[in-house]
View 1 (tube, rainbow, N blue to C red):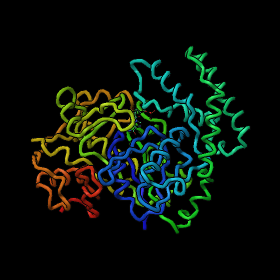
View 2 (view 1 turned 120 degrees about the vertical axis):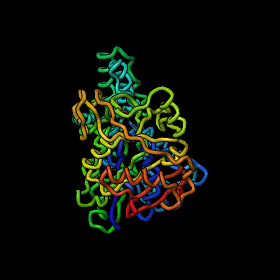
View 3 (view 1 turned 30 degrees about the vertical axis):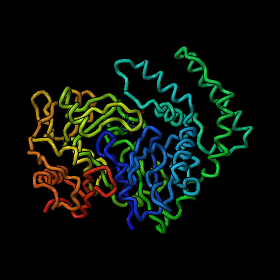
Length: 431
Ligand code: IMP
């Protein structure tokens, strides 16, 4: 069985959770490799909806082993809560979850610093999820942060180390922000308790993933956020602090590039973005509100309303290229069911000049206007469709158009929240 990487094709929230769950069957492992509890993967299993932030969506498939890679920043408080919540729902976690000892430890002061730095940025705030992601990666790159492996130290040493780090952070909180200190002793004691719960799951990544390297075991790589939020290739500075593009799957697990297999990008049939930053196809006022209501576009992590707009082919082609996608999945097609016409950005206009390529320069993107093509809607429900032929003809035409313009095979189309509201199209959608 070929391994597979699932990548967000837009600004996150493309519905990856459901796709990872739908495509997760048969894999031995599901691996997360970047980000932290800023992700919010929503999965519908039976009548119940589950939101996961740290643990891979593969946890809902029995017997699948889940791995949190070295590229992640992990809040042990959030991880414990997620494990407990899943276990309360009857999902076994502890015997199937493996956490890399080289993952970065995200501490409460990272969250506090995230909040305070956002306040300081005022009008230029990024609109982060407030989960401490940027400050935790900053400590990693500064080579001063703790790693998950610290939780396996003798407990007294762990407590002393944690206190030292919290006191250092308190100096920054007081010195730079005149903010209240965090209770070092209390938090360090809590960490000692958490360490005892999490220790059995902390492993050496190289050893744990040996079976994948030796090709005896198969892996699905679960991307979080999306290509346009990538720290290097996204719409900097309005991005997250990790590599959401395909390279992150290599550096964030320690597995070699050759182990990646298929690279599948997930795109919504339209576009959304939470947080600030340029969004060329954004719909404002009532039009945006209408799409937000149709799609139930509110953040799974923060509950914030998502900004909504039309599908952006310029950004889409960029995603295909940057990640070398071998396939694409289109999600939430059913959200467009009632619209008489649908628009798609074919190119951008920058001061009267046509741009076909996505401009990575941060000063250009906010100034572009989308060159929109109008496409007839289908005004019929699509969520019962089990195969392409069941879709109304304009819906099939829309998909064919996206496939042609993106230049990648569309290998699946999601038409609803449920696991089975999914059309698999391994040979593409163009007949
Ligand atoms: P951070 O990752 O919390 O630092 O937030 C940086 C930017 O990425 C903000 O615009 C967030 O809204 C956005 N972001 C982070 N995680 C997600 C996600 O899982 N889905 C969508 N947007 C996200």
